[in-house]
Length: 213
Image (cartoon, rainbow, N blue to C red; front, side):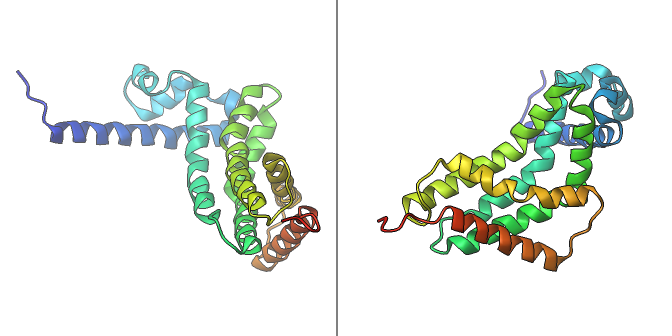
């Protein structure tokens, strides 16, 4: 009878995690190069090696695999956002740090490539756009909304729907992303100028009501 020790279990878990990471690395490249519709689970399994059943044991469908890929791509940025959006008496500085990071993210080569893939495929595969929105923009806005709600409670901003306020603020960055998708490469100075403009505009729009406590 084989005795399974904690050390063995740890090695198995590590191997399983490595296998999952390998699957995601291959799948991300396939999705970027071929689009959602053009990707097949069979092709990913063939490149991975082993049986197709191995791939299916990790991800039950192509949609589930794409969901995991988007989560992988956006996780690092979500963690960065959580570090930036900490309670502070200097709301302007915090929002500037957030917007600066968001502008750099949405105008990055990786983000532009991902958006092009999604825009090209969403008409044929609406679920692709929904997955991306849920994993990317929606989560970022929810994190921002929680921070804005705290600022509203402190009287730093006027009372409003925090999620709508977060949508308004992040939407101000979309013009820069459109320019990047058309080939413009933003300099650090341009990012700083855009950051200052966007945050100033937002703070003016959501300034506390005169006489508010």
